[in-house]
Length: 299
View 1 (cartoon, rainbow, N blue to C red):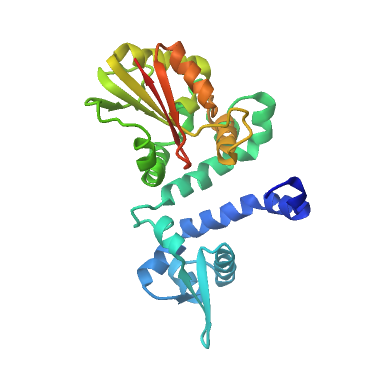
View 2: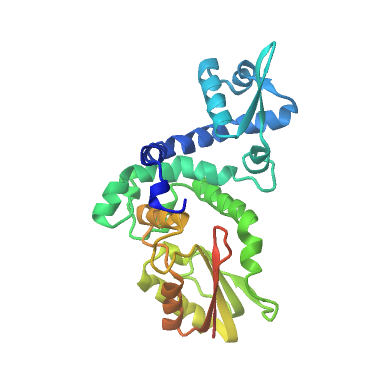
């Protein structure tokens, strides 16, 4: 859209107001196994057949399938026997469990965890803190400890993060020439308590956005101390524009950090400042045009 005059204001507002309905239709079809069944069947199926296979009501399944058609997640063909449904290419690639690029696990994490936390978004804005205690009855001073209700949920979250990495990881790792670094450590675990081994390059992938500035400085200082001279740290994060006017996805991620953690999404300048405060210099920034960007600091 070239200007505000191009906006169809009523339509935009209606689309925004129903955005969560769209998400929940996709999440539900994933959870019930619609896309997996249609992939495994090798042929289009009727709503009755799908409902019978998945153990749902016929009326509910028919409406779900039609909504998925509207979202271009399914295609429908009208025959003499009735409507037959099949996956579209995007569903086969991203919404079936068996696909190498499957986003199923992150969909389930969003549906069963994020979705429930966002019910308390207004409370998060009022109070400036995460809403796990309200959403799940979990109270913890450590936001990372409060992020998972169970080991199963943690494993689903980690699988979901790996699935997102399958889409954007190549772009992030290609942002800089990392060939000079022969010892690379992908930071994870309880890094505030555990020791950090010596390495030439540390990768902090979607870690700093979980924490406030003080904790970020603390962690980066610890990494700097362990880092070999001439080494560096690679931050993988979704960067806000310097005026914080976008990208929209990153703005929404930052709201999610408010609801679920103590952190936030940041601008390139804000990450550079954190790196420099920890002793890193020669900071370089590369925007990938995808979900995640790259920031490289050198010791």
